[in-house]
Length: 255
Picture 1 (cartoon, rainbow, N blue to C red):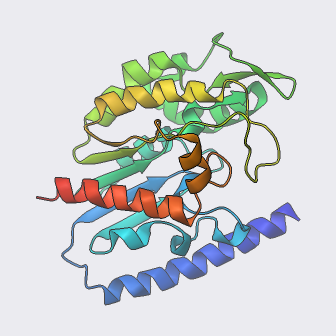
Picture 2 (picture 1 turned 30 degrees about the vertical axis):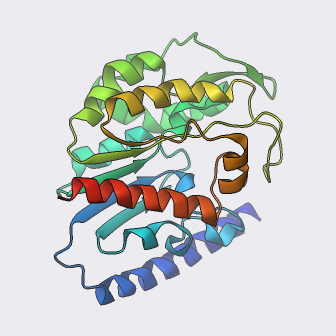
């Protein structure tokens, strides 16, 4: 069933990707500023499943007038490392970069999940000389489902490596992380880890060091319930809010 669901998601996403490209031609954006939008699963609605990675359930409509190349959660664990790898390898110079990532890297995850994620990012980390930040870790957080938890990116890595790397990129817009409520799960089927809001520490480092940032870490309880379905993923109201904020940042840069 999961395999069939994945096939349907990919099929629906591909269909809407093609129709979105056709719409773009009608917007006459050939000479418009080029924007790279790179997101984790928060870039689109996720429920029901056919909305996942679907451009029509994102905030692309808020960016009309820009020539946007988008990546909606291209990997199981879509990381800031994936963006950096794409940036390293890209032959295209974009005018602006919208980076809606971080929760995958900053939220505590069980050791088994950490090891699975590390195995997929290992080659890039070796190539960059960063692997030592991810091995022999002992900065464990809470237990979750019978396992110790660990943030994929440590505070040291964010301070020593990630922030300087992102600071090299001109016209970068970072979309941050909102708090998670302890007594509300929304439509998520189980509680989040007790230490989930440790993610806000790394998030704050990026907010402090990336000039064009959109901070969500002061969202109050009513805003989290208004804009998200599960503390993490946005509903249409949340996506409209993010899209408007991104458009505002783009306008300030596009002068």
